[in-house]
Length: 383
Image 1: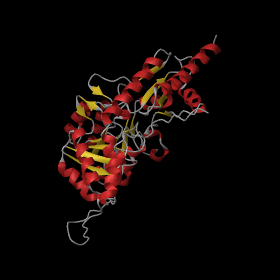
Image 2: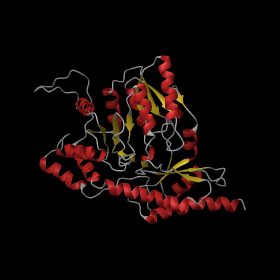
Image 3: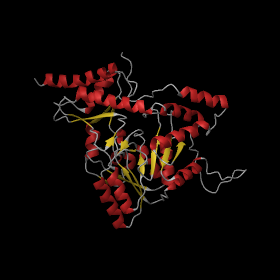
Image 4: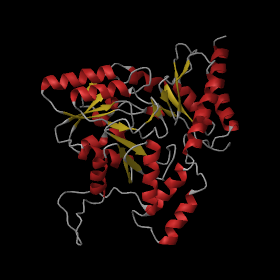
């Protein structure tokens, strides 16, 4: 059996151990400490924002973003449908109503036309839309100009889910810095990792400070433990922040390698009939966190996304369908969605290829050879 090729495993850079050893040497093992401070400073610089707070997950960051933006029970929150469920679950934590917006064809992200339709619909109903959550899928920036324009017109804050997009840019601005607040994730499969972790960044420092306060159990500045509101235990530890500091040291290298992996796949596979890669718009720079393809069985001679996935799996290679839209998820089957069918087709025909930054060209050739094999066999069977 060939060695396992994972979809997107962690890739250490070398300096992580140095920062962890500093934490042990200084006995900063408990949450907070110099590594957390340093990690937040690096995040501010990379995202070009005024403030950052490191937390134990991107989900926690999104939850507290909803809280500090004043989302109330019964409010409507407009969330991109094609995303990981963690973009939507925190809406339910706050007892608000998630309403899902389908994808446009160019970037596969929130469709501004459907967003406008939803905003107009709820305004006519007299319902309060408390937040908009666009997502930069697989590192590809959403059409933020139009989304932000609509948000300003309807006076709705934007929670920019950049969990997959650290290092991506939109019109030369870092993803995460465009909305009212930005959410980042450092889960083990992301472009950089802290093992588990997340952050909120913003140009509005007061919102970040509110999140910082709530994330440390909402403890008041008293010599004893004083609490005037409900808090959360969402802060990042000094040890895991040390991993993050080492990872951020090599972020530019990781982005460059992921982009090179995407280009390699495209060069090797784009000649196969019916296969399509997600193109990068002129105003965007994607970190290419995962390389994704869409396969049209009608044009590919019958080759399907699932046939490719199973073939790779047979050879000890992990791949994964594109995100199943939230409006298809059983947990949200009673929620309203504004749909155009794009995300349904993407889920049906789309596949994420292995994209870990430690992949060698030999690994890539293994994947490409097996993918091409599916087309060769389909052609042979029809002749």
